[in-house]
Length: 244
Ligand code: NDP
Image (cartoon, rainbow, N blue to C red; front, side, top):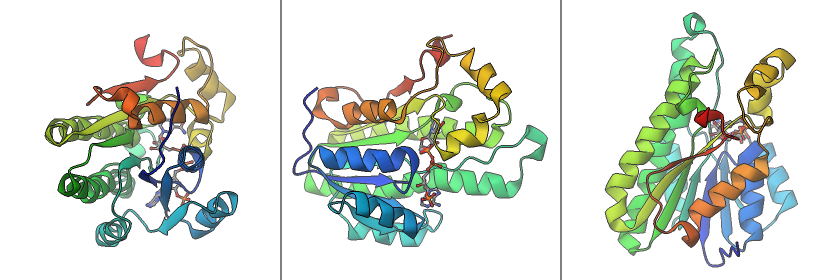
């Protein structure tokens, strides 16, 4: 696949570490002007040290007004990756209201906020846009100790479909990528213990966890014109977990 994002301005949220950071670097390597938004300044500084072409925005996505203002300041955006998320892992009875509010604020509400600002501007500029939201296999399969996280990713899938429905007429496509376990900091949180990892691995037909680069490949495809008729889908990158 010959990918070229020259002339495109691409916003990636949660780009301070993990999948988002590698995504920012990859998208920049395809010639796009990447704007990396995240919470921790030091992580963004490290990213810029690796690729000085990348522009950074330090903001806490939990702050609706500050986020809206920060995103308005980096407009116009042609391609958007809503990647930031948190995972508060607890058994059902230990899930707290604080966990719930934080998870839904970062994983779902901020996606609505950022997408509203970006999509409104895309419509004003009459451009064909693409938005990719990072969901998870956890949106469609219940995972032990993941009550609030699973619920938030279920919400991400449905938010994305409603966006696809309402933004499609303006030639803005919205899709999700739904990975299995990827061994980032977040992945380690849930799956470092060998017994937990083994249980999950036994349910993945390909018999392994995913690589960060494999998630990025799927996002790149959905951002690109190669997926020009694909709108409103949830694309698993899960080695067949959801099929089994
Ligand atoms: P990480 O925890 O490694 O990175 C998350 C990023 O989001 C960090 O850069 C973090 O910033 C940023 N972030 C978190 N909260 C906020 C906030 N309030 N404001 C701004 N930025 C914030 O996660 P992954 O890279 O593993 O996950 C990326 C996406 O992929 C997520 O949507 C996740 O749910 C999804 N996913 C991950 C899987 C996995 O196994 N890893 C599996 C399936 C889906 P900071 O620099 O401060 O840490």
